[in-house]
Length: 168
Image 1 (cartoon, helix red, strand yellow):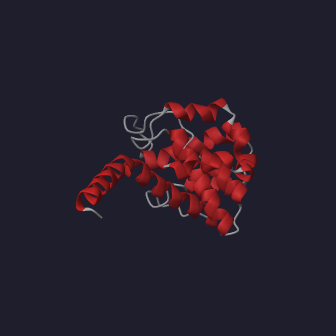
Image 2: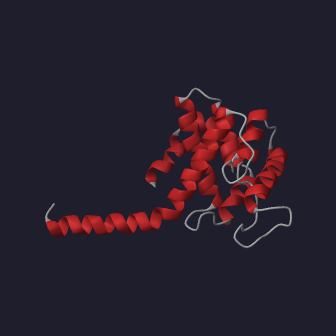
């Protein structure tokens, strides 16, 4: 997952999100496991930076993508054990994240839409902006990659060992 650490050296990206990354409310995400094998902060940065890179290629609003991507999961509970009467985690947590994000920074309409609609597919609300689709799809991809990472590494190790044994 080394490619996901490139964000640390990308000055354009850091200029967009460094104020958010410095906030204790964002750093607190490191205390929560996300997809079994990552923290919520690692996941949020991965979604933010990957979406930012795609947004650059598509000439989209990269500021909104980077910032809202970082804030899309700004909630402080274990989603595997905490349940709500108001609906599923897929429905509730974007609303909590939006509420929390609005207390950290001023949000543009695009950023609001990204945060509230990032669970598109699991919820019915269609994103309004292309930026929202990018973050939603990258979020799905990142969640799958994070969950599968240990198994992928084991499989690659076994394939590597098989290659050596077979002389290939």
